[in-house]
Amino acid sequence: MANQKNKNETKNIKRLYRSENDSMLAGVCGGIAEYLDVDPTIIRLLWAIGTLASFGFGIILYIIAAIIIPKKSRSRT
Image 1 (spheres, helix red, strand yellow):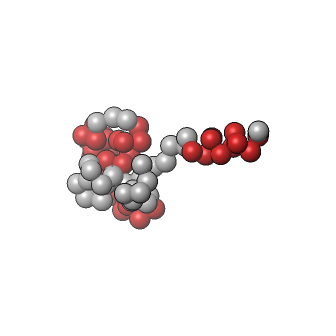
Image 2: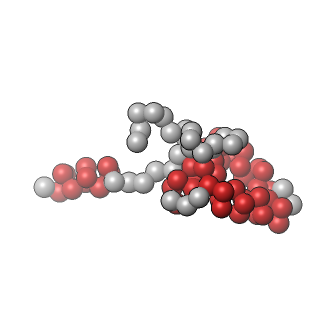
């Protein structure tokens, strides 16, 4: 019984992936927007404002995120 519960819990885990549908560069902002269930434009605007406010540090974070966050394969839904 407990083993079945653990299997069901792992199936319902929400995972962060880079988006293939809402991609402008690498799909990082689109993937974050899908994960948070918000419009990707809002995430892109917040990312741009954060990048300007941090004197370009957001660009480095975006590159790191594009490397670390996996791209959503077609078999994963």
